[in-house]
Amino acid sequence: MADYGPGPRRMGRTHLPDADHVIETRTRPSLAATEAPSRIERLCIERGLKMTGQRRLIARVLSDAEDHPDVEDVYRRALALDSKVSIATVYRTVRLLEENGILEKRDFGGGRARYDLADRGHHHHLIDVDSGRVIEFADAEFDTLAKRLAARLGFDLVGQRLELFGRKPAPESSRAAPRRPPAGTDP
Amino acid sequence: MADYGPGPRRMGRTHLPDADHVIETRTRPSLAATEAPSRIERLCIERGLKMTGQRRLIARVLSDAEDHPDVEDVYRRALALDSKVSIATVYRTVRLLEENGILEKRDFGGGRARYDLADRGHHHHLIDVDSGRVIEFADAEFDTLAKRLAARLGFDLVGQRLELFGRKPAPESSRAAPRRPPAGTDP
DNA sequence: CTAAATGCAAACGCTTTGCTCGAAT
DNA sequence: ATTCGAGCAAAGCGTTTGCATTTAG
Image (cartoon, rainbow over all chains, first blue to last red; front, side, top):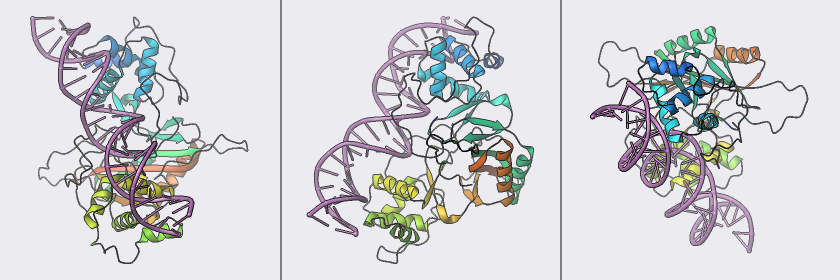
């Protein structure tokens, strides 16, 4: 990922499995399609969803992902495992999983939605503006504060979004083109 | 605004100045084009930007806006004042203003960017999920906490995004189709 | 056997852009 | 007089969808 936040959209992407912009893949060495059902596959079965080959494949990719892949990422990784999926199916499956509470859609800006396993528990994100890496964290103090802030304004809190944009305090080495944080995120 | 958060996009919008989906306009009764320069116009001149008629017009609309209009809103309001602008110009102007630090781009989900005067100071947003209204607030305690959270993870905080999604505690009246908060915003 | 999932390509909404004409400095 | 903005239409991107075909249960 090269830019985030509500900034100018990147151009020049296609649906083809190119490898540009990928910071890290971070997918555990995956098992073949004949192996034991993935975590998400089990959840699908639990919910009585029809399990097709491509659904199983996408379920595995998502179960193995330790990052926050966008649809393109999922598509590319799925093709790498067993190349017979269309991107439309990835979109449809990811939406299905979201509707069934298995995935959560995230918006870190940049125009592409990214996905997160729902059962990883409540957490927030810190985005390293230099590398694009996303770090998850949770904080009870913040959760309390959020509830209190909403209450102060006369609302019940029904959802929240907290994203921090940070930079590793550089020792002195020159860094390749340090990016500006996204608009609307003043410190 | 009818839906927010990284959810399914609304369909059926055009560039035409229709009035659907507008919750409130909240624009102070505007002065004619011959009146004193708007706040933003002054900032533009300060920065040596060429002031055309449509730029002056858009500057006024934005200066007078007390909400967080999207490009369509700005376009519609500009047309209402003095009907000779194209939406392309609104996009270009709004981007120019953002690049010059006069506006801030916000992303409340729903696929449309919304704009905020940069000099309104550091603040966050609470979105009423029933009405779509956006309420601004600031909180020093949160700012401190954010800095501390980043530090704990080994980062300097360079930006942040905090959005709360709330609902007015209903007395007992039935409410028209209460919406779910956007995905990825669990309480 | 039937309801539902897939693939493909076209459509859609928001945003950007190429190009020509017109306006600001 | 030159540089830069405006307008229009077309393209671009991420995402959704209509329809014919395949597949799971």
